[in-house]
Length: 309
Length: 239
Image 1: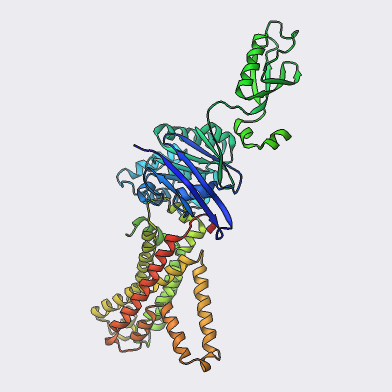
Image 2 (image 1 turned 30 degrees about the vertical axis):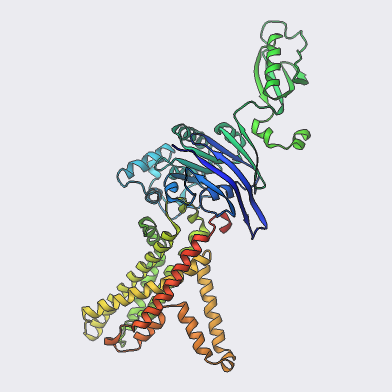
């Protein structure tokens, strides 16, 4: 029975303690879920991932991965990793690169060709390119290849560090589908990304990291942060909407009104629900509700930034 | 202990360097065959080790290739040992090739074929020299990123050369001997190589004590390389 990853009091510094990259991180990542890591540049995301991968030696603290240490080869044989920087052996051919990683992962030689073909096809890398050298590929194709090698052997843990930067839109859509499939399979996915929308769409739990510390964790529960909501209603709909004044709601404040639409400042999901229900009840058939920013974007902003907006 | 995937990968790297080196080595052998009674093992081995081995670990670290490699079930100890074995193997392969060309040259010029037992002995000594000298490059490469090992070794040699011609030798007792010992410690196997290069062909096998001393020095280099790699942070900070 997998218990996932538990981190206790993890600290890591560089330059003989002058730069604190991680400062007492505590976290639990459970299997079968997609966990997001969000934070500004230099906040410690990659260092945290490096410690969890056994690449960096923490100054103090403990990482427990189903009873194993990050350096344990048993953990690494069930790990898939997509690095932020695609530093591959560019002299290699795509197929040879996959064979090399299949062998490094110590997977069974029997069925190797089939396994590699399946991974490459799943990621949308066409067979006509399989004998080409990596140096001839675009960044987007290398990103796909990075994901393909990480998926070899159906890993139990999948660590992704900015996996879609440079990927074309079709690649991003495919990537999201693959990650959802892996998560449904029971894989523990850890995604570090700057793309807030992507993290919001994919992750069950989101951890905010800043200056080497987890500042908050969010799940897909109700959002209580205030935001501006643009509500549109159908003008063609029969009824008394045109003539009537807009209704009021306790947790919503009207900012601006135009023909067929209005801007409200609402207090979280509850405020949004109140005003939409009130509008519909008053005869304004709401057809669209557009928030001014995504949920993560709002959470990511500091109170000062929110006030400034 | 030896990871075959890493070994094969290391052997495949830098084909063009190996091919150009092969041409150089064969030219070298051709030039030295006529009129020489000795196989130029001592001259050719450090060159082979240096050219084939420079950056053997450091380049993996600086290029970022090691970053992905160590997320696979490959221990760092196995990685260092595999790199050492693959370098030794590559050097030995070239040594044997050169040895065969040399023997052919001897037969071609002098019509005196080398006895198979001597060839076997030479190839054994070549393997030992390749093994001991490779530890040096593996060690320096584990310290320095990229081709820094090559630069560091060159730097040390330049310092030794400058000290050798300096006035210090007039003030310090046995100064030249000290410098020689430093050089021998940096390149275990060379001292032994010189010893059997300067004796008759039949007495070419090195003295047992030298072999043991040089092997111990080489082992220290290898153990140090393993220890350094196991303590090293492998991250983007190494880029």
